[in-house]
Image (tube, rainbow, N blue to C red; front, side):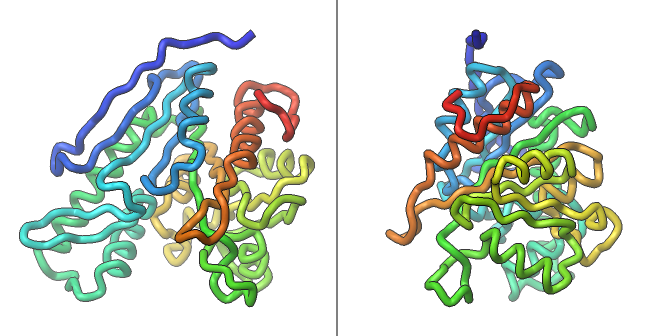
Length: 279
């Protein structure tokens, strides 16, 4: 029988910029020692289901909020600097992120340096809210992507797909060890840092990607993402990706992502794996 926890919810604002907030559902604790994180506010297909599971099994779910979009902005009056909030967890990643999304912003300006400092402050707040840099913890990211990928010759519009990861690995991508194409839709996949998780997902027939530990030592492979930062800290990381409808293209794969979340909770709770489980 599942225990029902009294759900706890609060809003934490970034002190340096109050319109950037973390919605925190549940409570950070060492038991259970997992934390779920949704960095992109418009990728929310399964958020309500994650909340239900946190209520059943404990843990914490952190949702980054500003204005409902994928990217957030750093306000350095009178300028706005765009950042991808999943590219701010390392110094190298923050720098690449700001340069890529703000090509006209010079790196020797106070605006750039202020944006760097505020991005770091946000990253530190997120990590603290997830329970800190304790290597015994598990971080589970919740993401949604768009149908297919650009250049797939099948009218794809996104940049995440198990087929695209396969192409990247075949082309020599250094941030990947292995890619398994399972039986599901190409856009529904797991991205993990631990070989044991990859093996279980592979055996269960799911699309899965295993990150290479080389991301820790190779600056070229450091994109500042939470998966890279987790690998640096030795923290177990699992990303649950599923398709969502975008501009009436594709569909919300809520049913598929629900099954994926159930599978990961089975792993977290040390239960036998059943990828068709409803609990």
